Length: 225
Image (cartoon, rainbow, N blue to C red; front, side):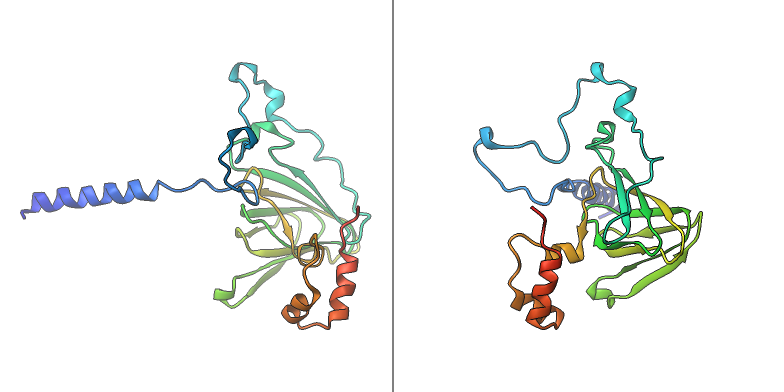
């Protein structure tokens, strides 16, 4: 095979590789999607139905209210104001969302994960102690840092992370996420507050706790009716 043929073969392989790499399933925008054969019982997923472009106006791309502090009078002392596609229709298919997080003194945004998005956070008032934990394969390493006004931190997609206000005064942060609906799984609420509850014996062994301790935690995180 001459050099010209080698070149053409290499180009063909590169083109095929590019074609394969671009053919992938879209990222899911819901927790699960069970297959169904009856279209009359099906729901539209991974976004929203699109509005007729002729009917679109500036209000579809605007949201007001992020200047209003969230109510932090709760058990964890924080409040997340979420601007996702449900509140700002113009975000549909754009792959981004925005949140405002308010913290009372010593308030926290408890350990949680976003299954569908990376988060980048900037502190606009006060001080925050933030961090994330890497996967089992990476040794569950903690990456944590104190952030002051104007500081930025990124939480990679899927990593368990947290934010805590160690100060005597309220703190405020804004965060962008790389999904129109990144989802959130708060670890304690999910594990100890599931419906129906996870068998306490399973959790006792997993967390190396006494069964009574697990049942107490399940009572604390039991969903309100």
